Length: 243
Image (cartoon, rainbow, N blue to C red; front, top):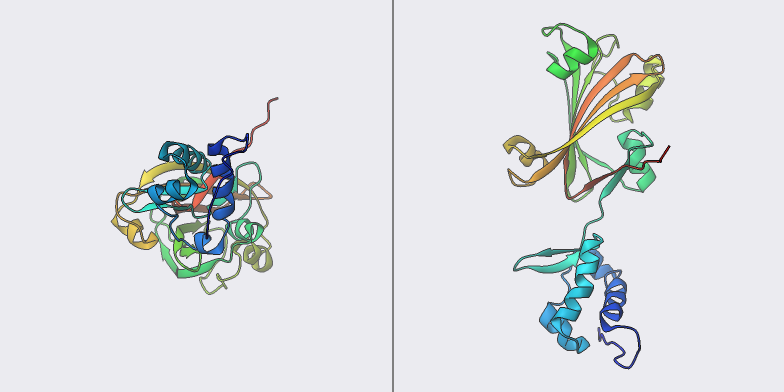
């Protein structure tokens, strides 16, 4: 594709270059991971300095539309999953709203002793067995979140339920439990060997850890959930209003 700018225009060249790049990266080949032409080649083709070109590229990198990797080049950034803090949804609802088809890579159901967080949340003894569900989920090409859910022993779960259904839909249909509230905690961390293997990243790479304490409409604890997210696939957005 022949790229060119209008050097006679009153519009600054870096702005023209930025607009051209915005159109270029919409093309399928770049959306599918192809690297942009290198800066030397592109600046020569556009007949502008590398500094002018870099000004345009930097703007798109700052906006999260492009990513740069040393010695590799520049390409379109992968679209991230975005979660809004002011509107709590289940994971399945979030993905459906975003138009993302979710793939389940692993599903494990077991009975085990509760984690310290679940023990406190459900107010149970440390040796009391509860149902635990572990799921590895993501897009078709790679997983991006590993979930561990622990459930209140007050819910008569046997493990034979259809956990391939949206979780809260199943709880409502089978046990008439309607979840309403989620208290959340989010922090940044680095992936240990276990989580790195699950998420197909390198140990030590950044991840986001999202804890959910889920209550039903009667304010009774239902689920303690912890999710380990690839940081390159997930954004958490908080919207605040001034009172």
